[in-house]
Each structure stands twice: as structure tokens, then as C-alpha cells.
Image 1 (cartoon, rainbow, N blue to C red):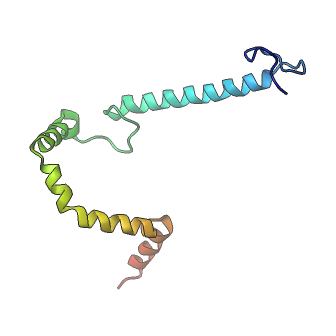
Image 2: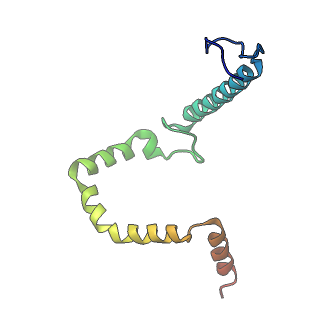
Image 3: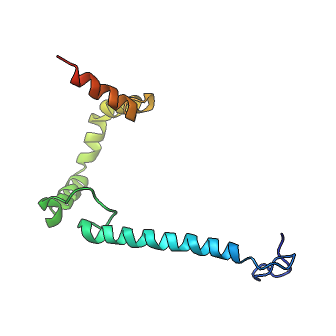
Amino acid sequence: MEFEQDPGSLVLGDGEWHGQLVADAMGKAMCHARWKVYTELGRLFSGRGTSMRYRKPSLNTLLGITKAKKKIKKDLGIYKVTKVINAPQNAKRRLKRAAGYESGLMRFFRALARLFKS
């Protein structure tokens, strides 16, 4: 099934109309449109400009205090200092994550161990 001269036509090389292909494309477009609506609703009700949140934002976030503090710290260069200070802990965390320490199964086993710890 190849297109004739005009690839934009709705007729395939053997004369069949490719309505199913168009319907599939429209279905994907409709699914994408629904996803965009849900995302926009999440932005509307989340109090932030990003995606949906699982909990309500704090009062500091709503008032813009958190954003102001982050800007001040960035302007002062505090993050460059903490980046160096936190490097060993971050490397340890990345190593554990790569080894599977934070996988769902390992979390389950650690929770079981806490239950039976005496």
C-alpha cells in the first residue's frame, strides 16, 4: 500500500480510502487533547504553574516567600557552596539508587524489617 503521486491524497495506490489511518490519527489527537485539558485543570487547581500536585501548596509558596528565598540564595551564591558541601551525600545517594536500594521491592523489605525489629 503505497501512495500515488500525491502523498496528501486520501486514496492509496490500490484505490482504497485510508479512512482507518485518518481515524487512528484523530483518535490520538483526541487523546492528546483530553490530556491537555486534564493538565490545564491540574495547573488551575494546584496553585502553581506546573503539573498536578498531590497536596495543597503551603502558605509560604502561595505568598511567594519560597520563591523569594530561593532567588536570594541563588544571587548570593549559597547554592555553589552547598553543592560542594553536599557532594559526598549526593554521590552516596546516587550509588544506592544505581544499586537498586530505592526500588519498590527493597523499600518493601525495609518496611518489613522495621515491623519485626524489636
